[in-house]
Image (cartoon, rainbow, N blue to C red; front, side, top):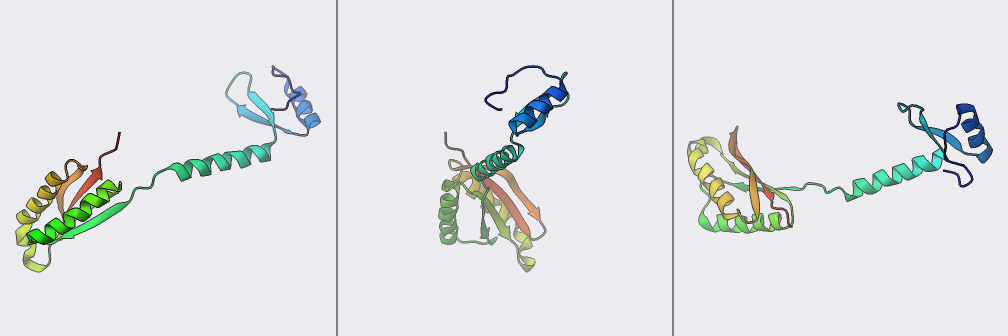
Length: 152
């Protein structure tokens, strides 16, 4: 708002004249109010600052990173532990974890082993993250999502 402009209720013509005199724009802020609320500002500068604010807000917004870990239905203990360490690291870094068991060919008969494997992983990572989606079979994959626990 201009420095030399008084705040008050003015007829539209007077407000337009004041804006023109100041070399600024008369912008309607709240059209549904009675009387409508207007402001005398430099509209280009207003748009520029609004864009700048939106860009800053967008930069502050956190992007969700999803890391994947793949198991086979008959993954042995050493491989499981190795992949579990990676899962712990991902959750500590704040990324979501997508753990899945991929069934090749006839290995689909080991669905129960795949589910046990994923549930074991979920229980061992319980202090780092919470299960967002329990193991669910989708085609040849059994998928489970784990979200990191927020730090307070």
